[in-house]
Image 1 (tube, helix red, strand yellow):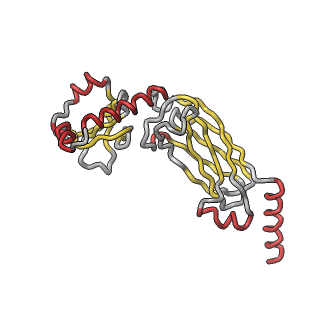
Image 2 (cartoon, helix red, strand yellow):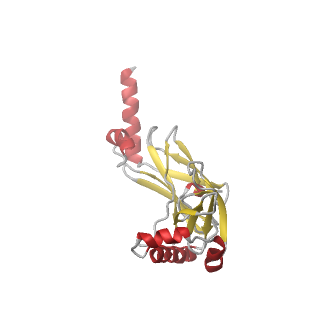
Image 3 (cartoon, rainbow, N blue to C red):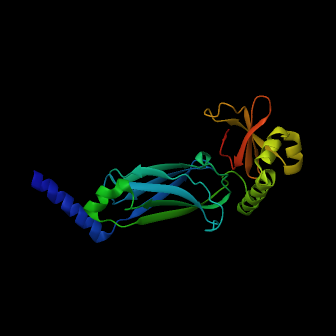
Length: 226
């Protein structure tokens, strides 16, 4: 019985190595921010795959987009992912997105599989148009630049300037100067915040307490949850 099991493993490894490992993906758009990815592969059970969104317009020197990396184990030649942009700490621009699934032999989780089958890196992608969070990519780049300048001017190398801005915070004035905002409810872990205001023009969010005082701010929608 042991000989049969060993032979089966040997034959499976030989088949995978001989034919080369492969990935096939099919996508299903669940919403403009969520995509289900169904994977078929000849990779062995226990191999870990990664999947994520990659914006087709993003260049190496552009600000990073936090496109959440999801991981799933292969089971019976299949794996299913649900990629959700709303989990991201970034404002995700609309446009063409690469839905990418890959196998990396460098992952610690794949060490055993790699040692047994000596499989190489594999990747498969499919392009989809998604509205995402509704902001154009070029506009998002400009907003990130404006937000960075905004923060730099406030801080100006002096922590007292930042503290002064916190004291002088005024939502109506901000709206007049930097355009409309979207109000979000804070995450459960953010006990101090009563509301979070996201300004698309700056790609920044501002958290306020029950008294309407500003207590924190940052890029993107890091602290926010609708």
